[in-house]
Amino acid sequence: MLYRKIILVKKIILLLAIAVLSIDAYGQGSVKALIPMPSACYNVDKIVNSKIYLKKIADICTQQIVMKEVVLDQPYQSVEIYTDGKLWKTHILYKESLEQQIDKMQDKIKNIKLPDNVNITPQIQEKAKNAFKYTESKEFQSQVKEFQNDITAKMQIPSANDPSSMFYSQMKPAVKSMVPAQDRVYIFISSSMPIETVKAYARDLAKLGEDNVFLIMRGGKGGLKKIAPTAEWISTALKIDPLCSGSCELYRTKVLIDPLLFRKYEVKAVPAVVYVKNVVNTEGLSEGLGTVKNSGFYLSYGDISLSYHLKLIAEYSKDEQIKLIAEHLEK
Image (cartoon, rainbow, N blue to C red):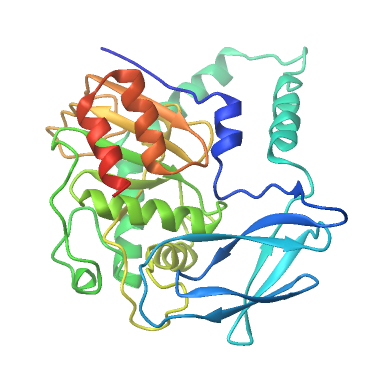
């Protein structure tokens, strides 16, 4: 089976990371930083120390994820962002550059070693083998599926298999899928990621059509036993207007909880984008199972836009269809 993988080089990730903040020198005694905006309808009104006040400049505007550059008088660890005089959110800033953070993380990974005195007995090997088999069992899949259905029922989150649910009436109209029916686009995410980053991916997937593109989580927020926190987080991630409360319009994007997909495509960090070619799933079960075949996949890491992920994949694979999908997202 053809098996292809792209790991983005560190410098590309550093130059194009859009949702993780790094602070650069900007004049004497001041710094510049990127902060999230609720929507394109807002602009910066004034900055008082670590408090940033926004003003509404329009009632109707394009729904997009907006990151605004501001100039602060010093490198604060966090800033408070206000809309209409009320605190909207506290945004964490970073003293270290993104490059410094990645370097430190890589140093830690290099230094991880198993103790020399670890004795992996046949009994331990057998238990590990049984645990691996259990994750592919119908019992385990049933538990994950039940958790997914509970979220759908509790918060009316769209089910991957139930496009007729009432929840869809609150979502953007479906569009014809840009991705060939036999292919898949998976974006692997975590609830630890900035919500603005997840929302940007949800928006882009909604532009591609809903049939075979997914946001993938390894598990629930707080574990598989805690449904409400996961449902609330997903609902927030899909909400088009972050200031909306009550019945809100949502992106038509499917969210799956499937740890088997993380394992199958060897996803070690998030966000990660996987483009899979020619999926054959005759049983309709998790596509993370070994029995579900494909003709190859491409893996791209980095906190960069989906269009750029796909551009890199298209360049590597020489696949014109993937290139067209990337260009469609930039329109």
